[in-house]
Length: 122
Image (cartoon, rainbow, N blue to C red; front, side):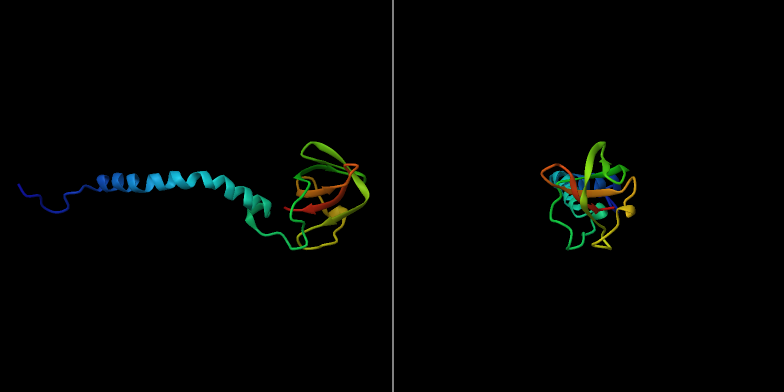
């Protein structure tokens, strides 16, 4: 008995493709969260931060509240040093007024746990 035409049905091709590609996807899946962390370190959306930004921050988070002498970041209260410096991706010497509730920031602290520099990430 001879078969005519394409004897391998389309759904069988999909099954074979899944058998071949599926294990490869499972092997690469554990690396995906690491990629997200690396992108997070370089800024939201994976864009690179300017060279004048520090390689690491003492902490990062979103601003919940900001006042003249203190800031709440991710529900934690920090005092702002009177000599605190501010920076954005477009301006190395920014004003505190440019930082708003909801901004994602990185910060550096001193031995008194005061923020000495605040860096806009998003």
